[in-house]
Length: 369
Image 1 (cartoon, rainbow, N blue to C red):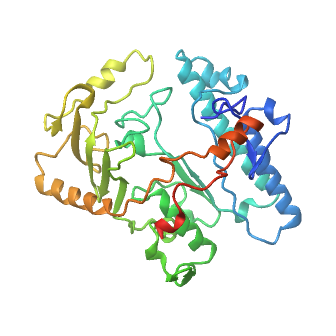
Image 2: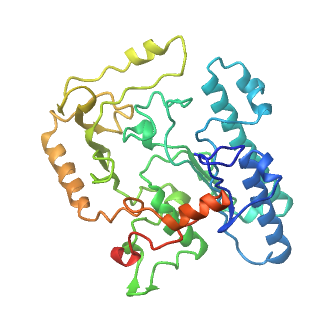
Image 3: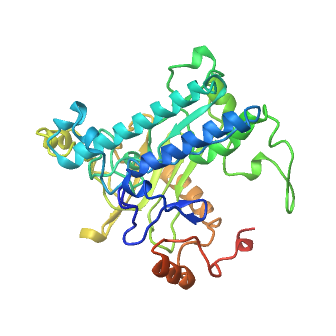
């Protein structure tokens, strides 16, 4: 990831305002998350002055928490983090505090501008923690794996429009990040969006999207309309492991065996691991680093994925495997593999900044239509 202080990734600057290099000298001396927060604050203040009667949409993709592990000293030395002995864990704690402070700041700005009572807020992380400072116990695995420790993430919604009986509740139904687009569009149009939409090749409805409108589900807590999630299909460009969730059941195929990662440097680490014994129902091939296994879990009964049920439920295994194979036919071409962009490389050498793609892109969008 980009260095939070130098703004380099790893040797070229990677800081932009729209498609232009962002060269504010103050930004180069400021922790990057503060730079982004300043942009959010500026947008909201400008909207209050120049567009106060119009709706707005802000997508604030925070850089924290991510490697490299870096945080302002004031948070590293904060009592909540300073007593943590493991240095990665201490900095990770400080970066989480940065997230908290950014959210607090945004809510304060919205309140000062009288936006808060009419704004719907979604907070959503994109994956589980890494073993470098992160901690997913009792969930198994880490970022980059298809075990629950890698794919479950913290999320919440907030807004005055949420019915009081639903506030403070936890929803356990299936939802995927791709559901946010139709959900937010449904909220913004009072459910009208998606009934008929005009696209280049004709008309399309909600059913043409991968995402599902979850607005009424969020507002009422009713059963999720989503019944399955495809986590990954086998590909030819870097990752042959795949996983699918159907109802309570999840199938992982061709995956390395993942452990449970305890708190770094904790005294009871071995005890944590011992409490999570894997079953002997294995379906594996290969040895050492080449060992790959298939796993079948009932996530509702076993969210920590301690018991592989693949030999006990061969019919369930075949059903999910068949569904997974069906999804493979929809694999699109890799948009970031293969050819590079020599024109962008030349520009980076000349300016010191990474740029958007400048030459001919390796895969034309029409391939996906």
